[in-house]
Length: 424
Image (cartoon, rainbow, N blue to C red; front, side):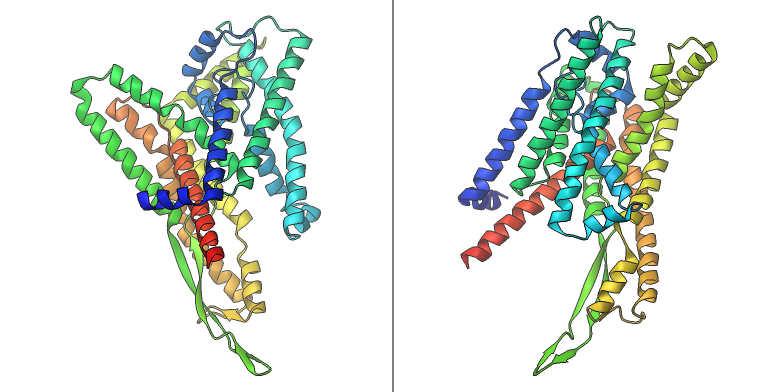
């Protein structure tokens, strides 16, 4: 480990890139601590601590929502816009063609995503203001059109500022900028959790605390195992003679990961879980009693740990299958293999190869989806059993943290490898 850090330190460009990324993350954390003027921060913090659903939103915003900072929306609107455009590429042929145009097409899709982020941020910002204004605690000052417009413009500008910071990080190629911003927003609360645990530590809970820490370590190991595990499909290339030279005749493999979509199913599941209780929050003060009762029922239902964990698990499994069907195209892979003279031993090229890859993908995806779902809900199960309430670690945050760390390490290693080849 220390040898690797020493190698990174010796490479000037890589060292400067890492320091630049750390500097950007510091700027992000400073922005997350700049609250809107006139906000009752103490009441706001109490409101978020009493609502588990809003706690998930706060996690994705990097803690900015809990402080109602200038970056209160985080990069949530940008993530939503990205997911929307990924889904639209399946429906709109023009967008699908852009994905095949290489770098130029990718840049145009990114531009469309940035444009779509603005109206989504406006809607989300307005919804957040209305939600906080209807809270029982006195959080926001008296609202008029000018104050609401000022808050929305500030939050939209904050979101686009974070998108810009994320792109600056990505340009350095030492990690995905958007993922690193989410990562920084999650881990910043961990020292405070440890401090709270030490302050209220009960010696009689030492065994439960050790078990909890051991299970969290095992969870991290499980996330790494599921994220890196893959099924290698053998592929052979036929020999071809062109002129006086012979090409092909090699054996290789096609890697199929157990989890081909990373943390996207978690984000999908969180978005769907948040939607019903958030809508119910708006309906608690309508004139009709039956609507109020129904809204309170929905809020209480999603605060029930058993129901919440069950629906969370089902959504993670379902979205793993759904999103894999979007990003993994067996028939297209089969066509590319056939064009390049490759084939899977014992399987006919073309349609039969596509069907074989589909069957293999569905079988290994079953294990990946259930593993991802189990990891997501594991902390929800063990925290009430062990009585550890001072450390609020969710499966989603662990998956995001481990995935981002692995991705960043791989990009740094690729940068080091590239520079070694340049030296040769």
